[in-house]
Length: 135
Image: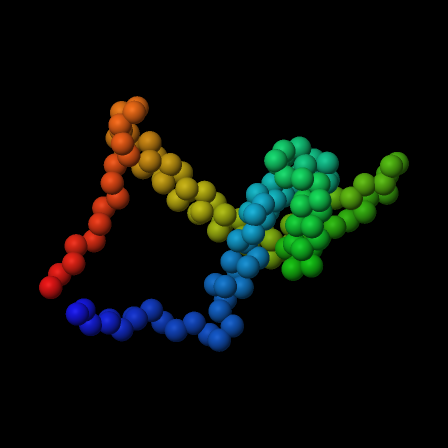
């Protein structure tokens, strides 16, 4: 039987900052919205066309949540008809390097998958590697 090793990772505070950040960034579409707002303020319809697969209902809910969490601001523009622009706050801008890093890792993973030899059509899938058991 293997002995359980001690975890050498420094302990996290009771309110884990990693968990807090991932609660904010981890939801579907959140990183996409922050990324799309990184260039300049955008209107609802512009964001909707930037991310065509997001529904208006979900986009509205995500924007409200990001505003509530201090990631973006909502400004009503006096025009005819009135419109609303969304822009990143200072906190929202701090997320940009994090998202850029995630994108870089994702691109690396894609290249690794593309470089992996594929099995011939019709052949059974390759078995997953199994851990060997020591006695």
